[in-house]
Image (cartoon, rainbow, N blue to C red; front, side, top):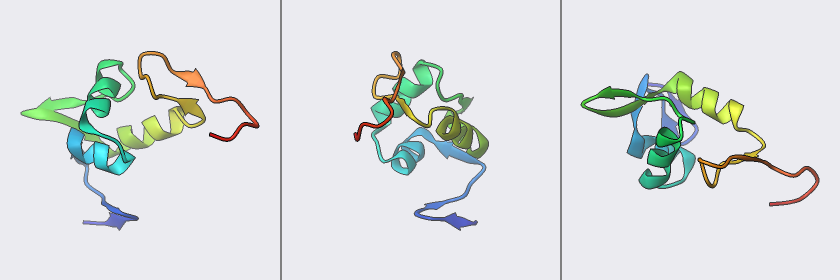
Length: 80
């Protein structure tokens, strides 16, 4: 499998794997799923396609997704 940075490329990732890639926790990724920000497949357990993870990162760049149910634009010119 191809290693990209600190994670290994796979066509499907479990939600705990997505949490590790994003540097967050499992509960947050579950909330992303429940809010519809990350689309999943259910094959035994929820899985996220690599392409879906790329789409999420692209679509929500420059946005505050701390609360996935209330996404906000990040203010320009202010450091986080």
